[in-house]
Picture 1 (cartoon, rainbow, N blue to C red):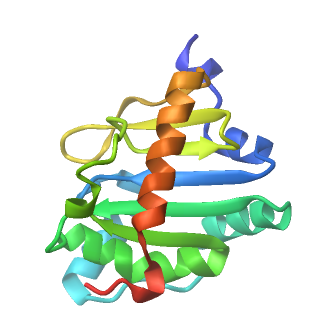
Picture 2 (tube, rainbow, N blue to C red; picture 1 turned 90 degrees about the horizontal axis):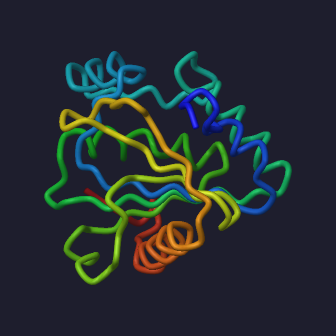
Amino acid sequence: MSQSAVPGFEELLAAARHSACHLEMRDVYGVGDEADDFKRWERTGERDTDPQSEYWAPWVDLIGRTTARGVVMRRARIVSEPVTTYIRYEHAGASVNVHAGEDVRWLPRRQASDIALPGNDFWLFDRTAVLFNHFAGDGNWSEPKWEVRTDPAAVELAASAFESVWERGIPHEKYTL
């Protein structure tokens, strides 16, 4: 199947009926669409946390439409401590994720040692499909950017990993850096 024939994130999210869960495991990302915001934050210490800003509004609208359909959105992040500059940046903006309707938790990496984890970050939709994200060593997208798996073994691994991380995770409002 060509990459163009593989459903993308927005298509899978639009089809979700019950849940969309995101597990992030990298300490640094370098994706182009947030590069300017990250550089500004490094320079000034100020993070765009306006849900209606040009940067956030598309995400806030998408998540708002999704949760209005009754889809539960959860995001869990496994992080090394002390955290990287990039994780500080993510933490500074996570209030907008929460405002949009996501529930966010953080798990210190040392507490994840006995969890079977997939090799890539992922989105799990309704426990029926997993979109694995592919990143290069520098944290930017690699090609192809993702792969979608619906085979029971991949779905179960992702579901088990996410639920284990979620169970141990610290709610965003209680996780301090």
